[in-house]
Length: 463
Image 1: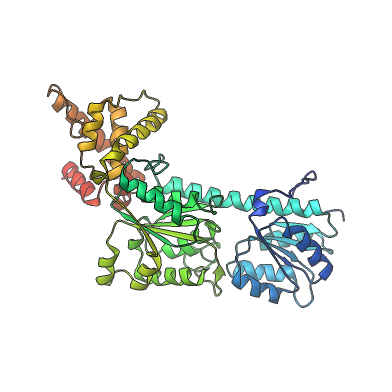
Image 2 (image 1 turned 30 degrees about the vertical axis):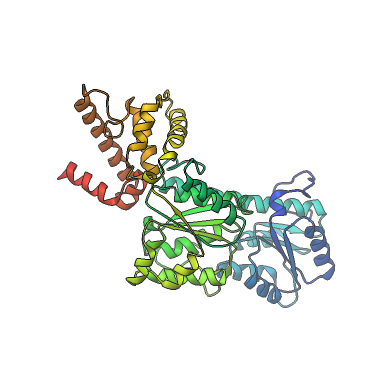
């Protein structure tokens, strides 16, 4: 048999400096000391972490303590085959990549290995570049799979355009203090709680923490806890096994696993059910996740950033939020002031949004004259930064600024303009509500307004 891998043949490649390989942790499981030594010495200068085990029992103990990105697993070993252990791993909630290696195989065994969940199948003896290419392919395939899942999920739950600026923009003392805090805290593994009114830029702050950290090359996974039904949020976060509940036709990774090595952002964390709060506390303390229906816990390496516009202290006093979880989340607090208290940020934000949105919409930007900027700075912005962005977008669509934000120099045509603005606002709000599947809380978040404001508008339009 000449088969060395089920993946397409590739030319020899120098993967010494492969960034995905360099960031990975690999477990080598083989009962032959010579093969373990060969693989370990080859990988220890190329990977972040390499461990070895002579049997599946030793390997299982290592998996209980370390979140490995990849396992290189020998099939024929004394006591138990690698293939049998792989099936058990998949059945108990291990989702990372596995390459099965063996000196004795046929096509039927190779097919069984792939059905059991092996990412690749390599026949001994192999050359260094062959196993390195197989490792690189598996890591890249896994990375792309996770990124695609997160992207599809984001496109399904978020507006197509970002809901805030791409960076912490502004000149106020408040935003300068936030930038300084982000720079100080980002390199640390500490859990951070970001607080502030809706629309103040909590997700932007969380992304800034991620980007400035050593985890920047790994995923940033945002989760809106208020937008996920309570009965499925545990599965969404921790994953589940096949048959764990009605409708679980196959096993699936949770968002903690998709954020492996990176940052998980729990927005609206105050909306988590009390039962799940206890499980989240355990994850933070033990750094292990138990998929729904699983008997074993799986270690995870995730930096947690949470955010809320609620008063969690008050929720603790009322018994709606666990005190112990509050203290674990609130190790470092970054509080974002409302936009009405940082007028110096309005002009740079308006200029940023005008440039970004005019390019997206394909229309010429409106002039931000000193008079317009002065009026924008005077407006109280109940929806904060998100409302400012929405106002700029509507202004570009209508060709002028709404009069309740930037009053006209004379009243001519003001009533007609107001009616046109109301019609556009109604169409936009109803469209966003439909995209949110009728979920008013999620629609209000996307629109940058409070739930009460949306309810009042809908009542006025529909009676």
